[in-house]
Length: 99
Image 1 (tube, rainbow, N blue to C red):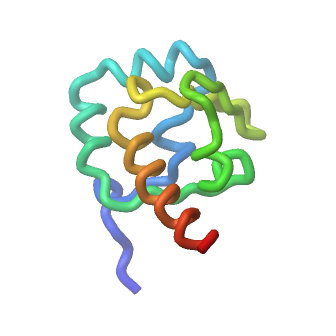
Image 2 (image 1 turned 60 degrees about the vertical axis):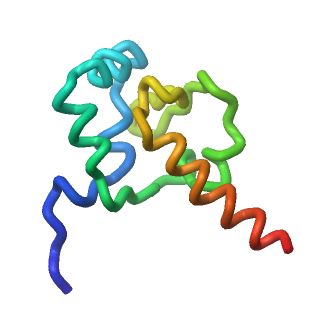
């Protein structure tokens, strides 16, 4: 097995969750962060709070926290295109599983 470089694959909590919701928004404003997030290929959704079946059910603006105290703000601004990608990928899969 070959390890992927960090610019290809990341853990979702590490890149998208901060210890305060305001920091989440502030980090999302940085142009180099937005570019890097848009180029991600693999994002692992680890942790009970951010399982795909839970994420696609959240309303826009919901704040989710993990056991380490990091906060996720479920908005397009805070997550860039990742929110839409997660919903598109997992919503299609959940519909297919229901059939």
